[in-house]
Amino acid sequence: ILSNSRAASTHHIVPFLDKSMAPAIAAKPLLSDLVAQSRQVPSSHIRAVGDRPDLANVDHESGAGIPLIDLKHLDGPGRRGVVEAIGAACENDGFFMVTNHGIPEAVVEGMLRVAREFFHLPESERLKCYSDDPKKAIRLSTSFNVRTEKVSNWRDFLRLHCYPLESFVDQWPSNPPAFREVVGTYSTEARALALRLLEAISESLGLERGHMVKAMGRHAQHMAVNYYPPCPQPELTYGLPGHKDPNAVTLLLQDGVSGLQVRRDGRWVAVSPVPGALVINIGDQLQALSNDRYKSVLHRVIVNSESERISVPTFYCPSPDAVVAPAEALVDGGHPLAYRPFTYQEYYEEFWNMGLESASCLDRFRPNACWTVQPAGCGQQNLTGHKCCLLPMMCRHTGRPLKDARSRQI
Ligand code: OGA
Ligand code: NI
Image (tube, rainbow, N blue to C red; front, side, top):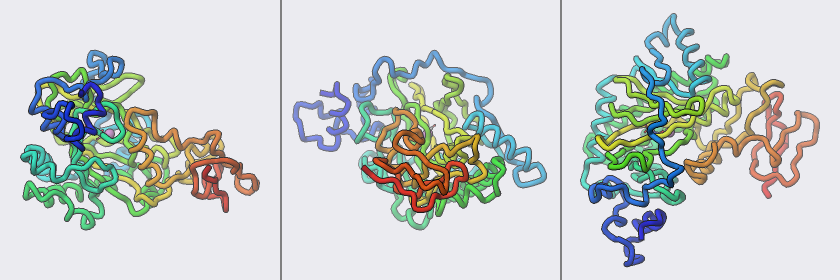
């Protein structure tokens, strides 16, 4: 019976396990194919009453709903003003939009076109890429993490690792035939923009221009191609429930359909797409690297009954082995080290395991009873019974690694 949502997701992995389950609906791993069979939201996707979007209680502002920043003068004499605007948006909103971002219109249009073509391919063709394993570099899946979540989300998504491009492009879908070339071009352009933004963000914090780029090791870049089918009852479900992005910075390309909402002052604010603009948001890694000055902000996606929606976030991240810790200049008596150092891999695994609806993943890395740092040189590292951190600890006053200080795993 499908009243239990987990039954539905286990079911589509092993459809023949229990003959009493409703076969026609549950046998579809992807939402796009499931909705084609039904004009109602299946029970697997219906949220509990207190956990629904409450659409009447959303602010629809005039304009984009978040700051709109023109990057035209970023690389000229006007740089300082643009950098300041970016810094203010990172500190106050965690979200902003950019125009004149340098990615050619034809590249953006190509990306959206090929994304739509991909999701309109026959089911058998799309299913070749299907996997529910979050560790896979290339996969098509549904919802967020069907292995851990209780209620599914109204979304299918293709997830691709994009950098270094030559390491991954041969594993990308080869259908539609233009996919690899078009998406490769877009992801290369998106990376160039991410690097320019990271430079501006470094400067806005009073750091060297190359600081963030250096702090992220060899870097990684992931892309999601999100497909939100029209939904007969949008008030019952989410495209994506409220979450914060785990990466450093996200560059979101969306088609003209609204759906993104951002949390501000305890309210949800609808972000209206601006033609030609990209949405940029700070992820958890930039919050940690800025020692909590810049905010990774909750956002969610609402679906609608009229149109499908496509969005393409580029998640720019540290490489898995990069140790994430703020610049010394951002740590002092008034601004103690906000998080213990961690590798991005450690963080990322925690993120996928805990699921989207839990409290912020970053909070699990805050100093607490299990983890404290003593000033360098005091010789007492408070190590008894601590779990989690196998990295050298850092001094909360200087941000420098504490020599030989290691916590133990319990
Ligand atoms: C995401 C996300 C927003 C959107 O994929 O993390 O927040 O508009 N997407 O699809
Ligand atoms: Ni997100």
